[in-house]
Image (tube, rainbow, N blue to C red; front, side, top):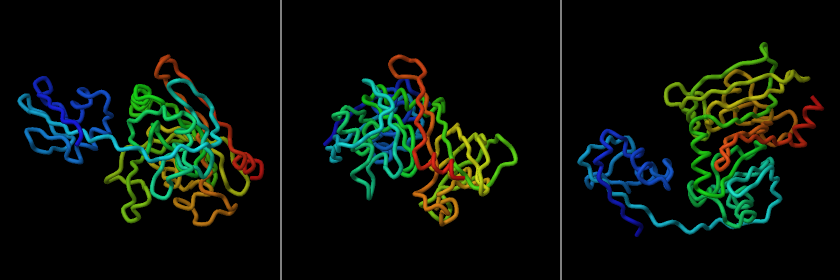
Length: 303
């Protein structure tokens, strides 16, 4: 069934339909609006349109908002490593091998399952039934700090900072090969791999703008380097793709690096060390540091 909403575009001439609806319906995220547009739930003058449709003053907008789907993801008691928590947000140090939100093949044991139990269901709903509270994610085998939101106001506030690239996100990694210079920038668009659709790649034709700043923390034995990466943008697999593109794939990354890791590692050696942003209520900048996991620390001492 769902709800039917109707609007006149009188004061919205030349605005994109998705932007106009985001202003008209502040409780809906831009991504959700774009999804229902793509699903044909938004009509202009009784005709389906695309998200980039430019409104005319005489346009009549009809929005069919689907009924909410009952959440079937079960709360699970988990040993979450909580770095910080208040009424708006919770910052978790994610362990290796843990998936952030449910997806095909991973419907239990995710951060979301643990948050649903710990927060007693008090999580933002903007990103849908599979990702309550989740504003951003890190890969299954990447460790470190992620923030989840307990209400939609906090979610929108932090999501806007992500969109504007104003959130501090510093990662640490061990990569193959030594560097000639201490600092560098990889500025190369990232999109789907043209052949292997499960992978991302530097893609100048269809990729999205992506920038990674790196700093060499030290050279290691065996022709490895210990580096810090700071994200200016946040594309899927960004650090892994960018470092592989300059001949410094991450140690343990069997997707973008050598097929076999010399140290029997479980995925890439990548840790989200620092996470900083403006708090949605206090409007003060806060920053969190996730200590290196034991395996990573041991590797540094070994090599």
